Image (tube, one colour):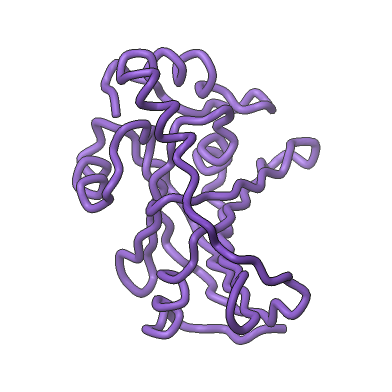
Length: 186
């Protein structure tokens, strides 16, 4: 069992800031529902305070995380060292989905460098912070971030992104309500 932390320390914050990606895991309450695990990249993660984090959620093919958080708020975020010393950090907590038009969304979104394609911000109040060794994780060299998602969002444009979210992100694969799509675009 790894070490438990009462808060995100300066050392943990520095580790998080060095990572090029993180993973988000959620699940519905029903035992027959699908557990979701999503990789995240870009410069989309922020530490708001030692017990609160947030990340931008971009338009994509599914909306499982949104649906699960709206149903039960449970979320785990994992950072994994792919270079340097082996280390894994898991942030457990209760997440909330902030959609465009929500004053908290508008305030938080301006602190991130990207805007186009953002369909929500996930804010998480941390309930457990734990590390583990990561001894079995292979070493990888970071080449560069992919810009495919950003180019895709740019090619769609704001109006088409709203339509895409309305058509593809209103429900989870298990039939749970996900994104409350409005005509407001990001």
